[in-house]
Image (tube, rainbow, N blue to C red; front, top):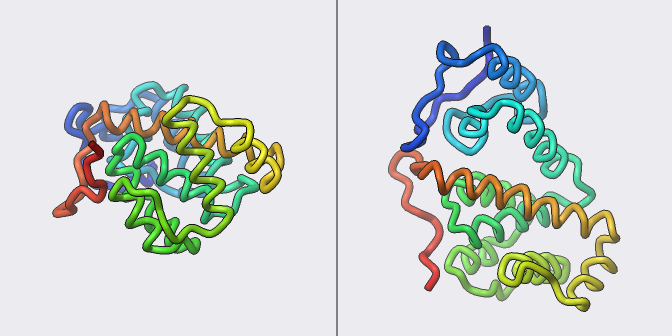
Length: 197
């Protein structure tokens, strides 16, 4: 069977999960996963950890697939929201996976650099400012102000607001998985996110 599981660094707490150790439910979930737009499953990252609960992975990966590849928000903004989440949780591996995607989608490098340092980004576009304010309030205060909600709704519509909540929630779950797993950084990579006081 070719499950297309791409070898990379292993999690320090969960260890490897080679195909020979997978049960039939796990193998079926991997097959389902690789048929989607990702095309592969890394042996590091949150999904290989979630595979320990295959039904959970099966259900959540469909949410992630929609949020990442089917959202009404442009990739620049959805990837920026993911980066804000990674920063909020100091999820180094999540940041490493999504920062290049955000830059490729058009996010300014200076915005990513400021965010990585825990600073309020100075060179954001207007729609990025709305996403930043919404996601930052949601992470810090567990809610958003009326004005922040209205700004987001006016710019992205109710669908966009709900998708932004979904992105923040889904990638928070993945950040928690990575942090509990103590996912090591690949190779010689230094932690990209500065500690926040």
